Length: 146
Ligand code: RB5
Image 1 (tube, protein in one colour):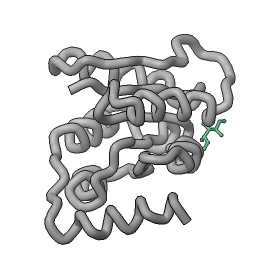
Image 2 (spheres, protein in one colour):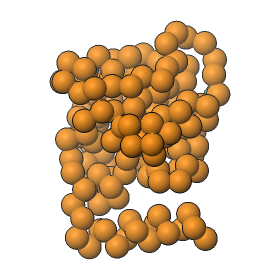
Image 3 (cartoon, rainbow, N blue to C red):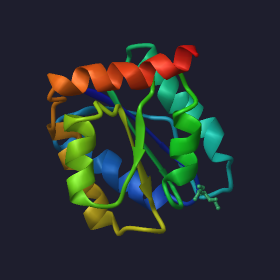
Image 4 (cartoon, rainbow, N blue to C red):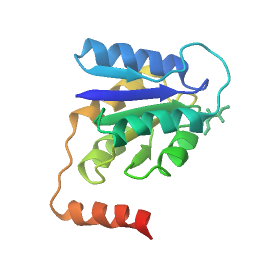
């Protein structure tokens, strides 16, 4: 599985740790930066990572900003993206199982690196359950066409 990732200045340390962790686990990672600590606008990074998913190059994406919220707001404006900002384990698992989320948004100022790595593992290791959730996710995506 190829995973797209990006961050702003609020999430650099976490993003770098996640990239290393995923590579150590054998995943292919496309890192759209930032690569050094300077101030950027999170929507610019979110758009890049989401494009890697909607193009089909990457299956899942991870975005890290200060809270995870700005990234999720921007990502959810992109057609085809289902982004979830979260900070605990239950949601990391169930947003894959039930929502088929394809982007995980984390807050570098909200959770520690250790928790972030555990949430990433749950997110990438959990498959969409389908079944009754399929129709619900389809209804969510149909809102894009309204
Ligand atoms: C940047 O200071 C901060 O606003 C950003 O990282 C993020 O938390 C926005 O939601």
